[in-house]
Image (cartoon, rainbow, N blue to C red; front, side, top):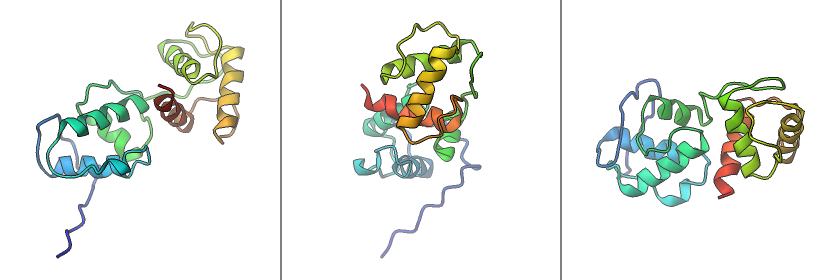
Length: 161
């Protein structure tokens, strides 16, 4: 007898999950991680228990989407899982400054595209580094750090460990 398909309604999932939790929301979490195309599908994530192995995958997903890698799945995690992109990162462009620009510089440096200082200023060097990154990863090289570019940056940094 075939197992019924698990329906995933992202708008209805509001549960916070952590290691040891059980139930249908853990099954939904595993399904969303497996279909995220972030390299988790081959890990055989399944079942209704939040195991240490699932926690490890959640932490990896959190790193890729610029969330705190604490292994706990809360509202921001569900939003990122359902959208399959970092949803809380602002659009950045030439002239911006602040902590998020510093995060972008750190990640661009980690993947080898930024050689400047981490000064939290989106100046010309970061602008051209971002264009190079975007072009290398098949994105429109416009120098604007949007949701799609944040996503590519998160995925690339996970591979650059």
